[in-house]
Image (cartoon, rainbow, N blue to C red; front, side, top):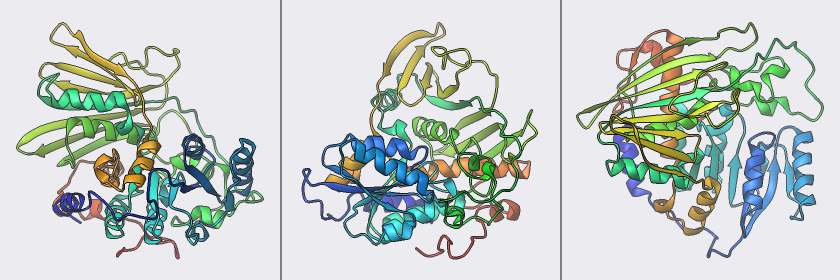
Length: 433
């Protein structure tokens, strides 16, 4: 799928066929999948919506699953079904949509299975675990004509929607660069010994497409982020939010060149992915060269552009800066922007107001109109590609070039080989969706 296909598919699929949801008053039945961590935020969001029912909870850890079911029932809501195997969930014809917050290595395959079963999907960031999956998840969403929302919340934030409008209007002049910041306190994970799989955990289903490894606590809940089999490091964990914001605000898609360097500094532990990373992207779209830089830091750090200064001394610095010919814009988190104009850096327009990405997803389900959708899967796939290219450059130890038309790194067999992985049967992401 080349860039022309992406653009054409978006234009052709601005709306989707009507489903059983005949009006705004019809109840949408959602299944929440993977509910230990971020999945709890999914449950909270849908629980607060009118005419939305959490019909099922799906998790390979029965202890976690049962706890969430009881919490929902205790809140006065209808008690949802409990399902361990995601494939069984898809057999339920009454479920309209699935909301996925499983580990990264499952996101694409579960989404493909869901759209093939006629379900709409909300899928957490990053939507793919590798470059190949970024193509396949969009292809499947388009082929089966389903609404698929990427779980990067900033695009549904009133503050950042206004920030984008200000940039398009030229508030800080001609844009030439953005900088993403992911300075987050991450302590050592230590070294974990092999042990028995906990009771109530279906570890084979948890492993899914990834190679089967001996069970350790470091490869399981949350710390899976720091292993290449299942995660993408903090670049693909927290950083993907800022990558998406930077790309969106700068108004670019695919880079022409990517250079990354970093390492796993300070701690001697099980972590495979870098905890310190610098990535530079060069864009050459429409005859205009633009640049994006990104930095991950895992420990003590200064602030930048005032981002994080309102918190405690040991809080994180998470955000973006956008640079133009007349000033710059500082984005803090997902909801807030400030502008600083001219050489004197005089305060300009600012706003701090959030929104609900889940709410936008449900609104899109009711209307079946992608024109109101803030976070279509195609945008998520492109942002995930940027993250993957950065990690590929880091792992190769050198710069790489990328050609959007061929969706490849020209004349670079080493880089292209890292676009996909060997999948563990029967959990392979299909070549043809």
